[in-house]
Structure formats: C-alpha cells, structure tokens
Length: 340
Ligand code: 5GP
Ligand code: MN
Image (cartoon, rainbow, N blue to C red; front, side, top):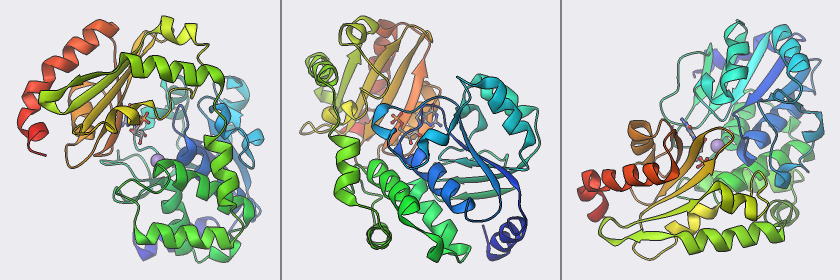
C-alpha cells in the first residue's frame, strides 16, 4: 500500500463508521491480539466497532483486554450476521483468503459488499480487499498493525490495552522472539510497547504458564507417538481422537506440540496430525527450519498454506491413510530435505 492509500483510509475513517473486525477461524494470539488492538484504536474515534470471530479462542487468550466483547459467529450466528450486514467497513486480520473464516461465516460474507481492508503477513493474498496491507516478511499481524497505526500518524494513540494486545500477538507469533522473522525492528516496536504499558512478564505468564494437568498428559502421549524419518530429517506426531478424549482435550491444548518434533537434533521438517472426528478431518500443522517451504508443501498436498516455516493444512482421509500419504511424499522432497 502506498502513501495515497493510507491517506484514503484516513479519509474514510475521518467520519464515524460501522466497522467490523474479523480474525481467522481458530483464532490464535496474533489474530486476537491484532483484532483487539485495532478495536481499542478505532474506539478512540466515534466509530461503532465490533470484533466478530468465526469461533471461540483457547482459554489462554481469554484474559485479553476486550475479549469479552467479541461476538462469536458460531455461537451467536443471528446477532453476528446482523452486525456483519450493517458493516460499512470490514477489516480482515491475520489471514488472506476469505474461506479461512470457515464455511458458514464465509457464506454470510459472500452476500455482502463492504469496504474490505486486509492487514496480514501471509504469502499470496487473495484479491478481495479494496486495501491490502500485507508483508510476508513481517513476523506478525500485530507488527503490521503497529506499522499501520504509525502510517496513519497515530502512534500517540497507543495505550496500555493496545500495547498489551500487540505485545501478546508478537510474542506468540514469534515463538517468544526466537523465529527468524523476528528483526531488530520487531524489538524496537516491542520496546515501544513496553514503554506504553505492556507488561511483558505478566503477558508471558498468562499465555504460557496456564497448562492444565490434562494438557501435559496429552503432551506426554504426543511425545510417545513421535516418529522420526532420519533419511528425510523429518519428525512427526499423531494424536487420535481417542487419545484426545482420554486426556480430556480442550481447544488450544495441542498448541506448540509440533515444535518439540522440530527441536530434535538434525530434524528440519516437523508435522503433527490431529484427528477431528466431529469435522471428519485430520488437522495438520507443519513446521520447518531453513528454506524448506511448508507453505508450498501444504498448498500442494494438504489444502492449506501459511508461511515458509509454519503452515497448516487438512486431510479428509483417515489418520492412517493421511500418514501413508505424508510418508509417500517425502521421497519427492529428498533433495530439498537432505541438503540442509
Ligand atoms: P498452525 O499450524 O499453527 O495452525 O498454523 C501455522 C500457520 O499456517 C499460521 O500462520 C496459520 O495462519 C497458517 N495456516 C494454518 N492453517 C492454514 C490453512 O488451512 N490455510 C492457510 N492458507 N494457512 C493456514
Ligand atoms: Mn499471524
């Protein structure tokens, strides 16, 4: 987006508007962080603002400022649809293809023609928004949003709530500042957020030190199930629906499990396959280190996408058949996987 685009957005926002902010389905810290930061920012003007999320977030995000004001489409469809229908502007945050809100909410959105503004950091954005502010090199949508507010010349509007939300999103999407997309600019922004009131150690504790006993038992099961394909520097984890049930699985419990597979010495490609009997799918998370693109791998074989080093996807086959497919694909990538 160029200077004129930001001037146009500023112009559009100079009058009170009905605005809706939407994260992707199964919202993570960056999705909710960016949506809520934008929510608090826009509320400083005379706009009518609502965050409408396709479904609910895991418990470890339930403390975020403004989270209790979010309208959940899945639980409150009639009300949410009404709010979407009224919207003059819809911001889509932390995703770049409209179907990532899930089928039902996607259908509702397809009937509408609001002014869309996309703010995101994933590769290959779809072309549905009037304004598309995307940089796949940036670590998080929260960093993009900070820069967006900066471009609107409003950094002085960032208060404790906004900085808390932005910090939480940057923290989670950078794996606590360790992923390669974490730059000196990220740290400069984070430093400013601390100055504006974000409490780093409190936010870390609220997100990371809230494991249930069941979650750690489930992690134990996941680690037991982990398999290594040494020839392809690949490790993968499976969790069946019955293993999830045995450990009283709750949304968000498996967050981060795939990173244990990637943490193995000599492993550069990691995957976790999680059975979801209700949806009839296997949910897949893929991670890599170096330049093996899991975004490409997922787009080509598992109906998903994401970033070079972190992507998601799905399979409609059984867990066993999905693993067979995954293993049969590895030889096709032998050169990419063994040369790193
Ligand atoms: P996760 O494995 O944590 O669910 O997702 C990793 C990354 O890939 C995130 O940035 C997420 O937004 C993206 N991602 C996850 N699932 C999908 C998907 O089905 N399609 C696309 N395009 N991106 C996905
Ligand atoms: Mn993100």
